[in-house]
Length: 305
Image (tube, rainbow, N blue to C red; front, side):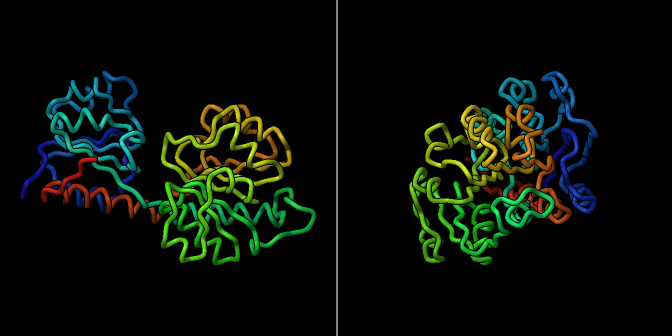
């Protein structure tokens, strides 16, 4: 059986003990690390002469770092990978130099769905939170607009639709399978104007909401950002949040980006500071997907983006 000579984990990678045990069949030597290297020199030193690397969203493997570790043939991202632009690895450089880069997706979506429903019910009914309207509201009849309707957005939309919400969405284009389910495609500003609640579910480093979009959104609305990073221009979002009639919800500080420190204590900003997708079950799914990628690599699967 073909194996890596040396596989290095650049800090904790989220793999369950059973998966770490199974990983041993794919490498002659495995090096684990309890801390994530910070500087370029620390990263290069930790990788050393390894031919395989596993990592989470940090550290960032720039082309400068990759050029200094020529033995590396495999880079396994134990985190979401949707595009080159959203990766913490310089994928173009890696692929041009014979390195295979893999990532995973769709391992923490269930927790995101539960978070949105939990937080929305709190706000609509006033459970341990100032009630949105004078009287408690059900999700029934609520107009919910999704900006991005991939796996996570689609699952959340289906759950809210089951509970009676009217679902609209903006994506790269209409999705026939969603239209058949009664979800309606709209242009972005039309969607924002129509919706009572907006949920942004976008790839990392994708900013779609600027001043003009917030003008279309208006006030007295609820917004969720379930993206890995910000989905809005910071200045425009800060101005919108400054109106106490607007409510902004997210699970992690990263969803607010550089705005977090400025708005974290506002009563209309709800950030639980924990990734909703990081559940006990999600770590099992993450572990299996990381192992599947390694198996695919040795089987000759093409992972090029």
